[in-house]
Every structure is written in structure tokens, then in C-alpha cells.
Length: 148
Image 1 (cartoon, rainbow, N blue to C red):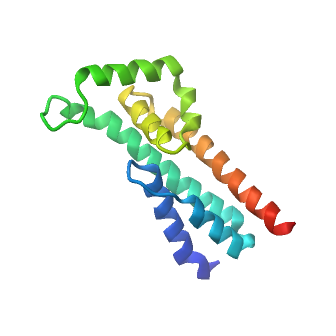
Image 2 (cartoon, one colour; image 1 turned 90 degrees about the vertical axis):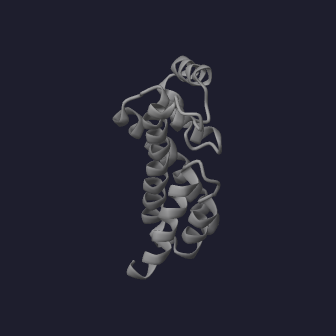
């Protein structure tokens, strides 16, 4: 497994940045790694899930702690917009974080959870479940394809 360390580190950072507000996709890297090393599927799944979850929690943190700067001219969202985000997130509830794996929408959900001041532990668990389920489905599909 030591020889996979550079690939796993790359997968971790790709997964992390793909979950932040920066563009990127980690699925291709994960699937390539699993196709090249099927015996490392669980390790690759774990690495991608942890990286992507930490990226989602970075968005949560941004939503939670950048609110202190909302009175600044450069702040990108006005008070009405923030209230709309909070009320929408509250209406759909914390369970919507299970969809944090969705492109674009998932980033916004994590950010909204922070703006709505959802507790960190609740957010982390729900984000982890959503992202792990998505990656597990991808890895399972890839392994099933490789075995057929």
C-alpha cells in the first residue's frame, strides 16, 4: 500500500477541494485508482470520503463564521439573502445535508447549514453519510464492472 501513498494523497486533496466552493471533481480520480488497484478500493473509498467530508465542513465553517463580516461592503450576500438562506434551510431541515454529495447544490447546502447555525456534529455526521454513500456506490459499480 505504501506505493499508493502519492495517489491517495492526490485523491484526498482532490476530494477536499471538490467539496469546497472551488470547481473540481474527484470521481474520476477515485474511479481510476480503483480500476488500477481494485484491492485498494476500501482505502480509496475512505480517503475520498474523508477528504470530501472535510471540504464540506469547510463550507459549513465559512457559512458559520463569515457571518461576522456581513456588515462589510465586500460581503457577497445582503441581510435579506441571509435570512432567505436560513429560512429555506430550516424549512427543509438538517436531513437535506444527506444530499451534500450533489454537484453545486451540495456545496450550498453545507454553507447554508453553517449560516443556519446547525451544530457541527450533526452536520459532520449527515455530510459524511451522504458523501460516503455516493462514493460507495461509485466504487461498487466500478468493482462490479471490473469483475464482469
